[in-house]
Amino acid sequence: MEAQPLEVIINFLKSIGLSVIQEKIPGPAFLPGLCLKQGSLVIDIDKLQYPGDVLHEAGHLCTMPPDVRGTMDDTLPVNDLNNGGEILAIAWSYAACVYLRIEPHFVFHADGYKSGRASIVQNFAEGYYIGLPLLQWAGMAYDNNKAEEFNTLPYPHMIRWLREN
Image (cartoon, rainbow, N blue to C red; front, side, top):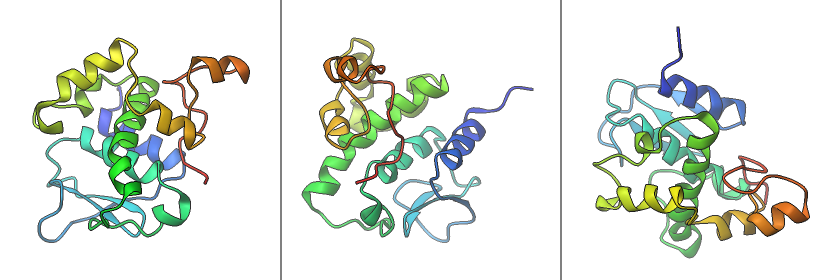
């Protein structure tokens, strides 16, 4: 029997060292069935409406420096780091879709991304990698030139899934 995408995602997140907790979430959350709690991704399977959101929210955690990641909760301060985090999470979650062989529309679904999901997926499909410069700056992926310089694969291949600095 083939694993379901959510199971594949959760296993992947745990394998890269992200803290994933499956438990009931009392009250409302930013996204149905998901919240961030002290650097962990909390999933309430019964309330989860879009399983692809798990991968995107994980991208927020994985692309932050470790000292920031460990303090992240649903209420994030408004600052440049968190504002840029949306672009990083989009790029990270697209790379994860490619790596896990999950259809990008599973993450970039019709009810998310302020009606921009089609253009996000189209840009990635055409090689216009939103957020790649930030991933490269964070030491997580390389563009074609840097990948060739370091004799590795370019994005959407990831050098590391968790940001180290």
